[in-house]
Image 1: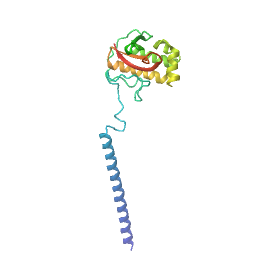
Image 2: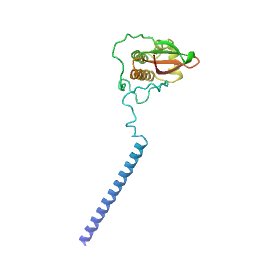
Image 3: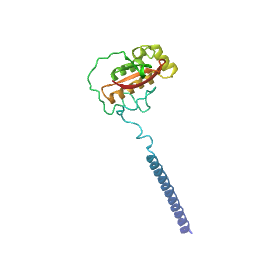
Image 4: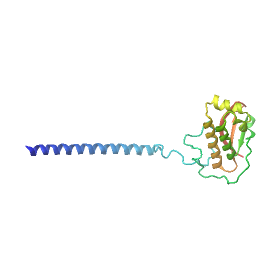
Length: 194
């Protein structure tokens, strides 16, 4: 009788091992199928969706209020930095120019000077617009009060577009503008070729 009990216990253990093994195999098959479907859909769980650097892009120049979530200032660099590494004197103030067929005002600057303006915004959000648009109170009102952006968000967006200008080439500048038709100021940044 003892032999029978041991044999029944061994059968139970064997059945449990087979059951657990089957369940594990089924889970692995399901997980593999899900990963395969995700790859076929072009989604690797976000691992390969985040750019490791900023590519040259002269087509998608839609101005933005904020930088992409994947961009980290000082960490995410241009893939091919085309800046010449020559020290250029900073103008401090952005250069006024008319764009939008004469229907809006815009200001542009070099990528390095844009980085300085980003620092200015982090240091004093209420006055940094003086060097960008010449109207610090309007700049602060539109970015902070109307659009709800923090100084850090504005600074990060300026730095993102400065890096985009660097990636595109030495003739590219960071710019910001008013709404088409004139004011109000948009608090959006992009790049423009000279």
